[in-house]
Image (tube, rainbow, N blue to C red; front, side):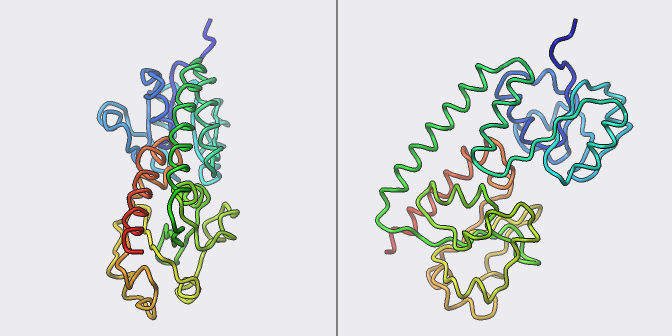
Length: 264
């Protein structure tokens, strides 16, 4: 009798990363082509989807007994798989707490609850230590975090929370409550009004161009541009809401903030 899923397809990279951390990677039979970590997954697992599209026939041919998805953007894919009789679990993590809960839930679904709890405990300790360092900074930089440039989108919730943990302040805190990127669109003039100390770009799917950002009309007056405090954090390190946002994204924020502190 099968009590746990044995053949899992992961439609985004976050659950792939978690399953490998849990030592349950042998259950994975298919992944998204956008999977980043761990590197070995990209080499050894079949690619069956992008992000908003999937090869349903290819997925069904793998005979999965569980599909992991992420967000409302995969709702149509999930619906098609459910209609085909497949069990689907779609996460929708948008905050730090949501990410940690996703790890716990993934562990429960594959019978690895204790390992999942241990991972979350270690990440929580890492967050606590980072917050202590952040709280010790003499100044709190105002940070404009841009996830897309046309239109300009910013302040995705978990990134705003990571900025706070590392000792900064997101310069559009009122926007982080919105799930939809369309509700987090700002204009160059609005950013100019907020005068951020640091600008961080993480354009999902393409390389950030700091020179183009600094040449936006009027932005020469922004402290971040004046002091050349314009940085990229790759989207794989901070825009994919899984363990990597702590092990890669948070650490880069800490480094950037320390560099900014040196010029104060």
